[in-house]
Figure 1 (tube, rainbow, N blue to C red):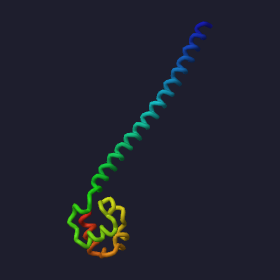
Figure 2: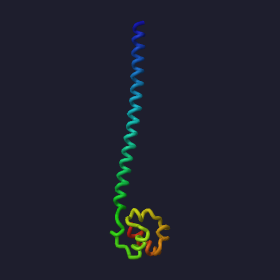
Figure 3: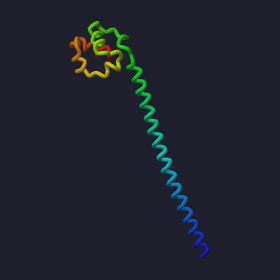
Figure 4: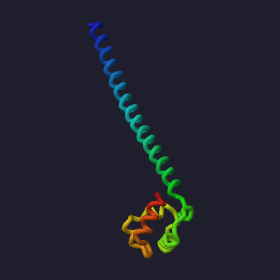
Length: 110
Protein backbone atom coordinates (compact mmCIF):
# COMPACT_ATOMS: atom_id res chain seq x y z
CA UNK A 1 0.00 0.00 0.00
CA UNK A 2 2.84 2.37 0.87
CA UNK A 3 4.48 1.59 -2.47
CA UNK A 4 1.28 2.43 -4.32
CA UNK A 5 0.93 5.74 -2.47
CA UNK A 6 4.58 6.65 -3.08
CA UNK A 7 4.25 5.74 -6.75
CA UNK A 8 1.07 7.80 -7.11
CA UNK A 9 2.84 10.77 -5.45
CA UNK A 10 5.71 10.41 -7.91
CA UNK A 11 3.30 10.26 -10.83
CA UNK A 12 1.45 13.30 -9.52
CA UNK A 13 4.74 15.21 -9.06
CA UNK A 14 5.76 14.25 -12.60
CA UNK A 15 2.44 15.50 -13.98
CA UNK A 16 2.83 18.82 -12.14
CA UNK A 17 6.37 19.32 -13.37
CA UNK A 18 5.34 18.35 -16.91
CA UNK A 19 2.56 20.94 -16.94
CA UNK A 20 5.00 23.52 -15.54
CA UNK A 21 7.44 22.72 -18.33
CA UNK A 22 4.68 23.00 -20.91
CA UNK A 23 3.64 26.42 -19.57
CA UNK A 24 7.26 27.56 -19.53
CA UNK A 25 7.67 26.38 -23.12
CA UNK A 26 4.61 28.36 -24.20
CA UNK A 27 5.93 31.49 -22.47
CA UNK A 28 9.31 31.09 -24.18
CA UNK A 29 7.64 30.59 -27.57
CA UNK A 30 5.61 33.75 -27.05
CA UNK A 31 8.73 35.71 -26.07
CA UNK A 32 10.56 34.39 -29.12
CA UNK A 33 7.76 35.41 -31.46
CA UNK A 34 7.70 38.87 -29.86
CA UNK A 35 11.45 39.23 -30.39
CA UNK A 36 11.05 38.17 -34.02
CA UNK A 37 8.39 40.84 -34.56
CA UNK A 38 10.61 43.50 -32.98
CA UNK A 39 13.49 42.43 -35.21
CA UNK A 40 11.29 42.67 -38.32
CA UNK A 41 10.14 46.13 -37.20
CA UNK A 42 13.76 47.22 -36.67
CA UNK A 43 14.70 46.07 -40.18
CA UNK A 44 11.72 47.85 -41.70
CA UNK A 45 12.50 50.99 -39.75
CA UNK A 46 16.12 50.99 -40.96
CA UNK A 47 15.00 50.47 -44.54
CA UNK A 48 12.54 53.35 -44.28
CA UNK A 49 15.22 55.60 -42.80
CA UNK A 50 17.62 54.75 -45.63
CA UNK A 51 14.93 55.40 -48.23
CA UNK A 52 14.10 58.73 -46.59
CA UNK A 53 17.74 59.85 -46.71
CA UNK A 54 18.02 58.82 -50.35
CA UNK A 55 14.89 60.80 -51.26
CA UNK A 56 15.58 63.81 -49.07
CA UNK A 57 17.74 65.37 -51.79
CA UNK A 58 16.93 68.86 -53.10
CA UNK A 59 15.83 68.94 -56.73
CA UNK A 60 18.32 71.78 -57.23
CA UNK A 61 21.13 69.17 -57.01
CA UNK A 62 20.06 67.94 -60.45
CA UNK A 63 20.54 69.81 -63.71
CA UNK A 64 16.92 70.27 -64.72
CA UNK A 65 15.87 72.61 -67.50
CA UNK A 66 14.48 76.03 -66.70
CA UNK A 67 10.99 74.86 -67.57
CA UNK A 68 11.25 71.93 -65.13
CA UNK A 69 12.62 74.25 -62.43
CA UNK A 70 9.65 76.54 -63.00
CA UNK A 71 7.27 73.58 -62.57
CA UNK A 72 9.03 72.75 -59.28
CA UNK A 73 8.83 76.34 -58.04
CA UNK A 74 5.14 76.72 -58.87
CA UNK A 75 4.31 73.33 -57.34
CA UNK A 76 6.44 73.94 -54.24
CA UNK A 77 8.54 70.84 -54.96
CA UNK A 78 11.83 71.17 -53.12
CA UNK A 79 13.03 67.59 -52.62
CA UNK A 80 12.66 64.23 -54.31
CA UNK A 81 10.24 63.31 -51.52
CA UNK A 82 7.92 66.08 -52.70
CA UNK A 83 8.32 64.89 -56.27
CA UNK A 84 7.67 61.25 -55.35
CA UNK A 85 4.40 62.27 -53.69
CA UNK A 86 3.01 63.26 -57.11
CA UNK A 87 1.56 60.83 -59.57
CA UNK A 88 2.48 61.05 -63.23
CA UNK A 89 -1.00 62.39 -63.95
CA UNK A 90 -0.54 65.12 -61.31
CA UNK A 91 2.81 66.07 -62.76
CA UNK A 92 1.41 66.25 -66.31
CA UNK A 93 -1.40 68.45 -65.04
CA UNK A 94 0.98 71.16 -63.81
CA UNK A 95 1.36 74.32 -65.83
CA UNK A 96 4.36 74.21 -68.26
CA UNK A 97 4.76 70.45 -67.69
CA UNK A 98 4.52 69.08 -71.19
CA UNK A 99 5.47 65.61 -72.31
CA UNK A 100 9.16 66.37 -72.82
CA UNK A 101 9.43 68.17 -69.47
CA UNK A 102 7.74 65.31 -67.63
CA UNK A 103 10.02 62.81 -69.41
CA UNK A 104 13.06 64.86 -68.38
CA UNK A 105 11.93 64.98 -64.74
CA UNK A 106 11.20 61.26 -64.62
CA UNK A 107 14.48 60.31 -66.29
CA UNK A 108 16.71 62.51 -64.15
CA UNK A 109 14.91 61.80 -60.89
CA UNK A 110 15.32 58.06 -61.31
